[in-house]
Length: 364
Ligand code: AVJ
Image 1 (cartoon, helix red, strand yellow):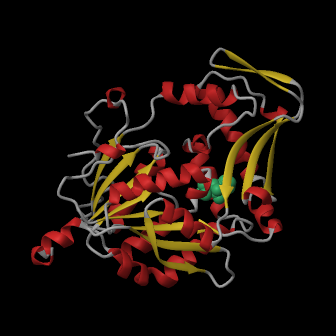
Image 2 (image 1 turned 120 degrees about the horizontal axis):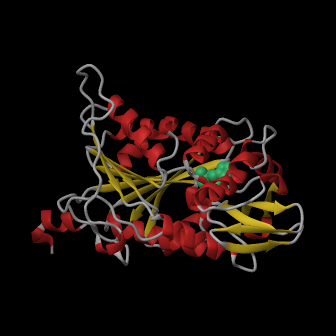
């Protein structure tokens, strides 16, 4: 097994080379054939998480990374968000995949290795797996429980599919359990999770994905579109308060994992569309002047001061194509829903795939 150099952590020594592998054909019942699941754990260490939280809270404008939302409870809350009447992105993207799945498969190619970044809703990947029938499926997700649950469920549904589940933080350079002879890689990055990155970081991430796929490789990526701010504000501040609970759960997690003493009643959920930046922002607002302790460090809040916990950028089609081009991709096709709420782009890494050259040596 190799890990592409460009994607390797700068200090792999912190992560033992030996990967945890669990369960061949896990979830199997009564002799039914099922795909095989191998699990690779490249999770950030608790010390990494702690350092990042302290750094974010120590800034003049306090912030925490949205990837911290996804502990076990947070992943459940996110699943609940995707079913909310106000939260249009998930069902809209599923509709686009249902409608155009076979066109997408024509673009991405079949019988290849499909990498999924941030394995999101299991319904999306089921639609794509059914259309693509890849030989290997490689989901990458920061939530271990979510990743494993979904991998085992898919192994049941797709007998013969080899699954390599990698628990990793893809917002930093990451490793993947790839084999050296795998040249036909494709990637799926659903849910508009690219919108969680500021544009410079989004470009960097896409550039790394381009390097991983190699020239000619294709990326299918979901991108939420700009729209009426009233729709956006409702989608991120739902009537049932599920998004508020999702946002506040971050503090519960810090209390539990990092010995914090956040008083959840002393913070409020706030979400709004920032038109100048074309992004929805989520914040946790301190209701009072207060001091909070995390891992032995003290942080002071003024009443009204916020922790910025998430940005969710909304990109018009041409703006996103430009960003993708700057990251080394060509835009091949864009699909949207009839209402123009959400888009799915097929991008191709610029350059000629080396295998194509090797297959036609006389044309050199
Ligand atoms: C799946 C990360 C893209 O930004 O819409 C949902 C996360 N945050 N409600 C998004 C989220 C609040 C979601 N992403």
